[in-house]
Length: 233
Image (cartoon, rainbow, N blue to C red):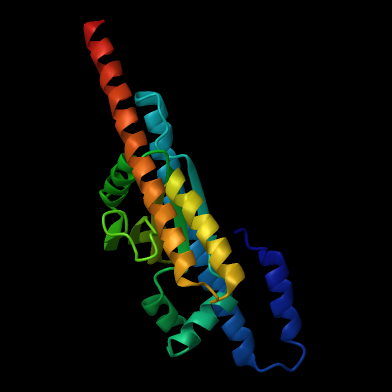
């Protein structure tokens, strides 16, 4: 997700001498500024999550976060989505209409961890929760499960502070396993999925959800036993 700004600057300096309209150069610069803004927002969220995870490692001897994945949509992807939705193609509309330019995916071992991390994150003073979509309690028709949050996080720049939207997805390891394979299969089929295949994917998602529930129960039993042992000592 790292942006090579030295190459970008070289590109901008170069096109200025080719006779390309100034508006084009300014548009490229605007997209680079926006990309930097959203990349900074992702870093803000990631730093908060890493701090939380380090605290839990010390205080509870456990890591509720298994993995953190991040991404910022490319200008090409942003433009394609804006055109699909028939939105005006300018930076202001992009920031207003698109909630998923910056994305953070949090993968946790257990379902309860997802809700705990979401609650702590959105409870921080500088995080504004815009929307929550719980696809764990209410899965999508294809079986997809995840907890989605859209939040605003402040990004501190040299001359201003800007609040930037970030989409946060929280999944268990099992949910992420299913989602990755489902995406791969559907992408390869490119719309040629059959009812039987979609039913099979849904059945797999249901099996994985039941496994998540059983693993959560086992974890709760072990935690209860550990707490009882600590009290007796």
